[in-house]
Image (cartoon, rainbow, N blue to C red; front, top):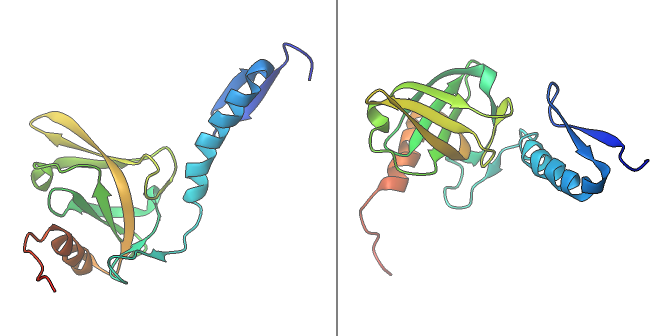
Length: 162
């Protein structure tokens, strides 16, 4: 490539960034940072999580198929899709007003939402938007199972030693 030539790196279908050849390494790293999370979402295979057996498994879902969602406690959101699948989202922090949230939305840079891809939940609290990042997406069999997983994770009872 000639000095001073430019090359395009395609980020998504409609977005494009131009990088000078002398910044080739930076462009490669940027492309890798943008590609790896997207590749992590391409698999629809569910992988069991070690601490909960088969109640909840790592999964991804398509934003376009979301039918409904509702908060389950202060750090979890239940999602149901048009195809009858159920998911439990774990947020990056405790949101004490989440159970009373209005105007909940889910957003991501990709159409598929997976664990740790930058997806975020937004809701309205006292007329102000509140943002939380989705750190885990898990497939569950039903809303009741999602509620049980939340209950298991938030139980304050101490387990017997032995």
